[in-house]
Image: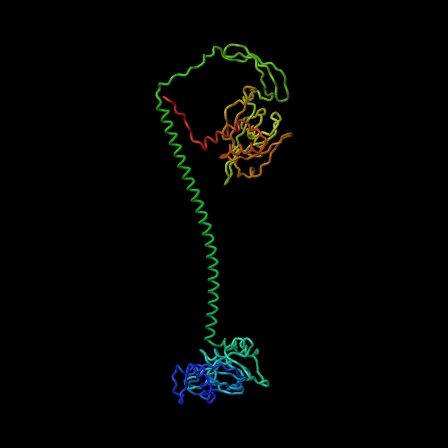
Length: 482
């Protein structure tokens, strides 16, 4: 009790709470200032509280019966070093005091163990008993470890430690009993369960955050796609409006033409021919394996007899009106532009490569459709379907009587046979297949002419010009002056 008084006096000066001569009737606020102290001490003995059998020392389910094992204990401790408390009071090593309010739970785990050193945070209760300072008695007691010494070194000072004093440091017995005590505590069990639930919730929150990030990324991609779709839609709308304007312009032009009066001056015309022109005879000049040259005698519209040097093929089938076929092959594939299948090959008469439609001669007993599909397969490897055939057309009527028929063929590019086509070229044939997009047909041909020394077949370029005029330029009709 005298030691408690000394401690109280020492801390009173340190915290500027003045003690009167009669110190017992102190106010609670002043007593609270004087209460907190820190002790580094060794436990000498543990014994039951003297009032262990009183009404205050039992569990709720034990009612007023005395328990076989007391719940409250006191510990006799001895200071291991001189300790300065405040600026005026120093308690020397070897001082002993009695700590009350220690206890254990139903699993028989003591709060402290004999012959072990601890760091105690202490206070005084309303009866001036020295007690552990905390929510419960475990909170204010720390085992003597290097980590705890470093942790609390700024809160108290050691000096004049006895060299002969044996200090029992923290050992595994403390750890096992501490774990047992915590596990047996219903309060600590609830806290552990709560911590586990918090950990699970944190993992759940982290997973939800990751899912949220993935959703944000998907939303960002969708927004980007939506912006692109809107741009495409606006561009299509502008093109549609331009097309409507062109149609309106064409309608105005047609209206102007229809409103022209019938009083149109007849243009002068040449005199009508008096004689029907005709061929009189054909004489062979020279003949080769594929071509022959003849001298043609004919009568012109004026009735005069004239001659002409004519080149002819030697391979024309007797019952065929055309020498061969030219194929306009349109390759159609999913998610691709429609392309025109072209061939590039060296032509000796031109002395360079030419860009042509796939073409070939008609064999005996062969229809135009069959010849077209056969030549397409041989030169390009594609299998197609005939969708249109032109009448017989001449190629160079001022030089030759050669004729051809244009065959329009559609190729299903998604067909397995057309994914990796294989040519079936004959001996001496060297043909390169070229795909040109239909909507840029003339442009791509012009680019090819800039890069390579190549001549374009007139049929090909006329077709390209026609596609360009049909797709990209409005119909312009001339206005006739009245």
